[in-house]
Length: 174
Ligand code: GNR
Ligand code: NI
Image (cartoon, rainbow, N blue to C red; front, side):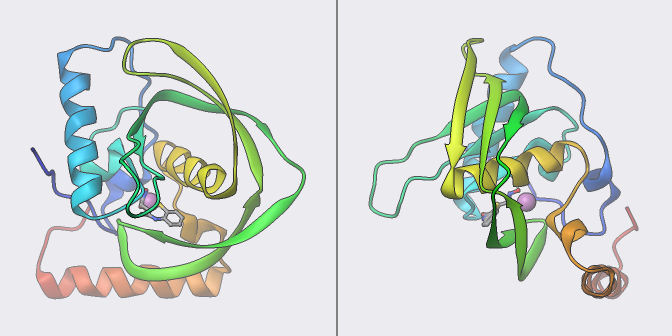
């Protein structure tokens, strides 16, 4: 069990474009395990590697309902290859933007292709909450946060709040 610290705004590592994973070696397997530990500890339903400061294209998710057995998913080099025309508005939150929730409009269904931990290529159709979390997590791999879809006024308000919090805590600016 290894819970890694989750980066919070305005850490600029959250704004980087992550690199593809070339080889699923022991380091990647440990990273996937640590990311799942970190996600369950938070708790969250998804986590992308840049959120633990690793700029690699890997995300973990678990969409099992409470009381159901866990359904850990590890997606390596995931790509969205199709999006639906119809959209849906969902209230989103992010472990890197703690304690705030805003409505975001996104395509209601997507097709995602990825490599799993065994190196197998997987194509999956996602809808509902699964489709939303996939889009939220894949955005993290490109340095995109859900607040980027809000009005400029709302986004700037969020950014200001976290810049101010960072000044107070005396941490180094990211
Ligand atoms: O735990 C999380 N919940 C959530 C709710 C609605 C839309 C997206 C998410 S993902 C989030 C965890 C997180 O920040 N992943 O990057
Ligand atoms: Ni997030």
